[in-house]
Image 1 (cartoon, rainbow, N blue to C red):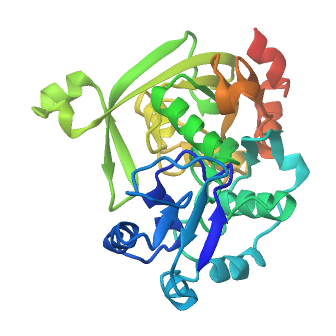
Image 2: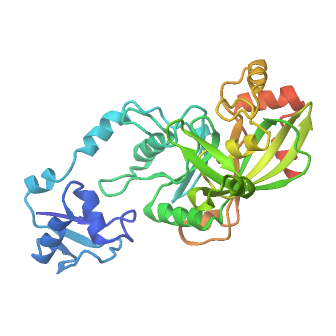
Length: 344
């Protein structure tokens, strides 16, 4: 028999979902059978599995240790092996941290979440940082990132440290009340703010997307329902010698949205190799020694909120771009004062 108390990071979820995390290879039918037979109890009483557990609730498993171990996949041991290879999340990479949320500055070349078993991502680095420093992370709760950035896009990435933090942030992102702003340097001059709207279609074979306007879809005789609607708001901060430094507000958040949307109107991001918009961009990239897009998740503006996100209510969080971005900005525009330009 095993007994354990529900922790703060396990509270608020259904009992059956918590059990499924604890014994992750067991079929649902097993849990419901054990609950019916009172081989699994909640606070000493028979339960159905749909109950929302609270912190301090006691769950008892009247099961043999061999049975419990047989329904656990061994991910914990695999995680320990991987953890030994994961680089430490450095203090200077942490932009904001409280009891429920951590916001980090993702470097260039790093995935948000791993695509293959052997990948190392910012998600793994955050998870292991929280485990090493706070002991956060159990068989039934794992912290993790809430938003994604392309591998070579730098900047602010949000992670939930607690289950309430993860749930509250997921809801905030779903409601689209969290304002997300980016910086980028493009080839071409944009003289006035513009609100871009269109439709995006993925090409899985080439890992690219296509952006079309309603008018282009109509000319093709295609329905917008086959595409994802996108909206990108753009504000110029600096113009010089045929280049622009742009502030981007991401209204919808789709794969490669900013890169493809800007390229579709003739403003390709410097360093980009997928969405050039103009074949001469390669010459510009070579001139400034650029091997990745100069796109940076610069600022998050939180709405008035409460609960797990109360400490972030009404606040803004920002982080300066990477050195290569700032160097190119200096070479082209003669300044790196992002904060002052943003206030103008």
